Image 1 (tube, rainbow, N blue to C red):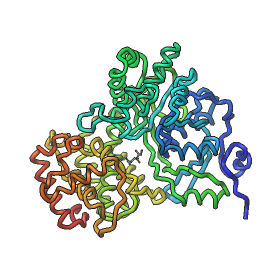
Image 2: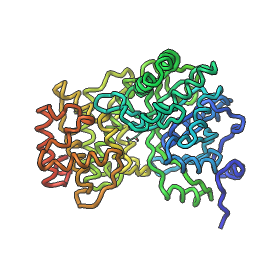
Image 3: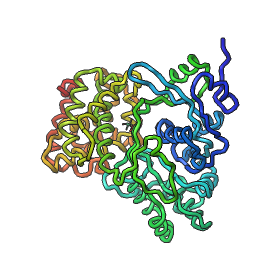
Image 4: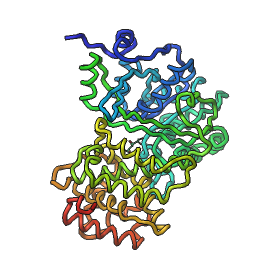
Length: 491
Ligand code: CS2
């Protein structure tokens, strides 16, 4: 048996005989980007674009330091420490081809949950120019229905009292910005890379609201000095499986404890608004635009909402993956009808984008048989996703007199899913949601009150008062509870 090669700096020369590895001098990179939330998506997207830039030219001001703020980040920290920040990106094409390469743009990793000063110091370091975020929709700490900052969060309460021991992103950002200000260093840019409409504006509003409670003078400084560009980010990145790890071992004798797999498609559209300089990402395909909002809306309301439509309905039917849904004609037609009849009519005008082509392309991406994106990943944290991805479309259509039936079935199915936790065959569904208990409690009252689930105002606003919606919804809920064979309701 050939000897396994561990992925780290010492074995790079040997690995480079088998697959592409960084050709730039990693040890001369400075940390210009401090990135919070080093999940698969960051590693397949921003860290990949940054790697491409390093490959292309000398961009040594722009190494990345990964940051984990939660205890759950220990594992990625340990793996990346062991692998000197490197990992393999496995790009899976629809025709079965696979390209793998070693990515080198992450050069350090720091954990903030029990040593916050280490992270604050890194953010406040003179070389740091950008703090970027993929902290997921839930990490922004706003009430989905009102859009207002949630001061009831216990971690927020803690950090307001102990500003040197922050717990959420807001406590870390204010501590670091304050330190930079005191030391006379220019403010960094806060660059949100999450699937939230107006992600930069939301990050700004939340940070300012928090800072105002903590230190009004600092809040005024942030408002004046810190930039928050909005961006649209896109690359489907399923959860890494043991099979992906085994693939690298079998194909390249390479031992990588946490590679990332993704689709070939990649897109990043961002506003050119940076407080303290930026990498020349346009050289590697990133689009800089004056106003990213219409692009974000298009992506969230078609791709992310389309995913949720397939995910929730697929979970109840018993399809394990998104590509399995796309092998099912009923699901394909349903998805297209939702996109054409409900999502598209309420999008903003976009110069130069052919929406038909965009939707055709989405269908091809979802159908990629090698991506095998699990419906459980797609359905995870639906309580943070659906208000923005799907419920917003229902609200827009109610206001415009448009169709709501395709999206409403998904909400009714989400109620059944949250209540029963099983698919139509009675097999249990893995549900991952921070609000799972609340969702389950509300949904389980459906028999007594068919509207119980949608009366959760923090998710549904006042939809429970809209007669057009409630009559359609209660009819659908009754039908699903009577017979959960969801496909019968999709035809
Ligand atoms: C997915 C996204 O779970 C979800 O919300 O729709 O993770 C999606 O794969 C990415 O946004 C693609 O860019």
